[in-house]
Structures are given as C-alpha cells and as structure tokens.
View 1: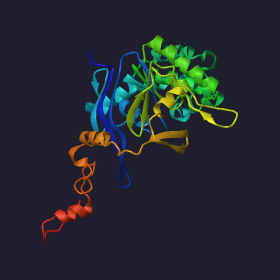
View 2: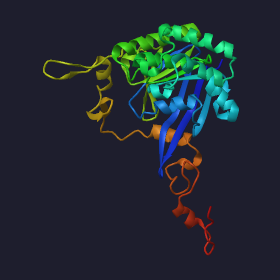
View 3: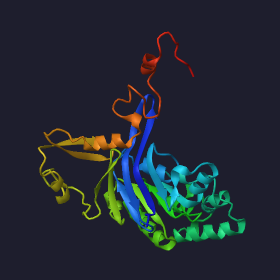
Length: 327
C-alpha cells in the first residue's frame, strides 16, 4: 500500500541571476496517513522549498511527488488550484501571510470556503466550529490587530483547516511566539490532528517543538540526514567556568573525528566534524545521477540545469561563417 506522502529523488534547483542553486538534493521521504512529522534544520537548509513542493506552490526540477495518490507533477490550471484550496492547508510563521488584516477572525476563516464555492449557509457554522476548536470562541469578531500573536496563529490554523484538508503544512508556526505560546500551539496541533484526522508536516529549528511529533528528521544543505526520532533531543548546557557541555548524543557523533569546525549562524552555533581523510563524493555522484543528464559537472560546457547552453559555448558550436541565431 502506498504511503500518504511520497517524495522520490526530488531535486529542486533555482536560477539566481546567472547561477544555479540546488535547494533540494535527491530527497526520499514518505509519510503515513495521520502521522505528524517534524523536519529540523537551520535557515536555508531547504525546509520551505520542500513544503512549497508538497503544497503545489512550486514544481521540482526532477523526481516524483505524490500526496494521497495524487501525482502533483501532473496537476495543471484549475486542478492544481483545487488541490491548493481543498487538499492541503498552509500555516506560515508570518501572521501577515496567513490573515487579511481588514477582516475579522470569522471572515478570515470563511474566505477560503467562499473561494472553494461552499454554500453561504454552511460557511459560518463551519468557521464558528473551527474558531471554537482553537480556543477563540470569544474573539470571533475581532480583527488580527486586536489579537495577540498566539491568538493570530490560532486564527491562521482555523483558516488552514477551513476546507477540510487532509494534509497540513506548517512552516515555523511557532517561530514568532514565546516559549509558552509555542508549546500551546504544538499541543493544539496534536489535538486538531486527532479531531480532524490530519496528516501534519512541520518544519522548525526548535528541537523542543520538534520532539512532540511522531518522527523527527533533519535537513541540511538540501539533503535529509539523521533520523532523530529515537534520540533524546537535548540542549547543550554551560558550566560555571563558561564551558559548553554537549549532550551525549552529540558527543557520540564527534568521537572519531580529528577536529571540529565551529560556525556562527543566525539560528545558532553549528559544530561540524572534520577529518583528514579525502572527502566522500558518493553523495555528490548520487545527486549528479539524479539531475537531468545535461546538469552534470560539465554543464557549463554543455547546458545549464535549466536547459540553455552558455553563450560562449553556443558561439563555439556555430558552423564557421554562419551567424548565431538570436531569440
């Protein structure tokens, strides 16, 4: 039996100016129906790119994507719009992306139903049910500016569930909340999952939030890494002399390395094990095998990942005496 979510050798590359940047490198990933999975990783690791692909907001450069038996790569036009509107719900970190500031909470929740063609007499009862489920029964007619950050995220959750989606994609939903509100938000996600039979994929860089899911995966530099589900998610501690005490699970990863590189990133401090041995190119070769045939290391001499030869090479390929065609 097929999994509810299936990603097979998914690659996503973007063109930025004249450079090609690979955001996802051959992702293999599955989820079962009703499961809650968190993916942790630093900013820029590719987490949002993965959510955009599963939400039908973007297309992969290579690979296969299926959600509840739907081949996302085959969706076009109105069918794709219907998938985004009815089959999947989105919950973003920035409340301004979730809510319209000029509409009350209840009118924000009814808007997706109106766009989906839900009958007018069904919209308000459904919206009231959802707002009550997220604990905002007494705040239905307030605008976002009259609500706290945590309350705004609860309204956003109701909006995401307005058209009864099967898959909920949450992109750093607790990133702008304090610790107490963040814990409350994740607990609410669990409650709603059971109440409405949701499958939830949440990306975060907060280990405390991640460990409440059924599975924890890591994503770094566009590649899925260690499965952290069976590992205790611990935070390092600092002793009285200012020395950082690493958790046992972290020290175990650094046992056989000759040195550790320390890198300061916006989201925290990264410890990266380094060795004196030659780098393993197996993963790189696997990526090249996954990319289209004209996207290998000699792509600059032939074609880029997006299918255009460089102007220099195109000129060299033109028969002598015949001018290069222009477009």
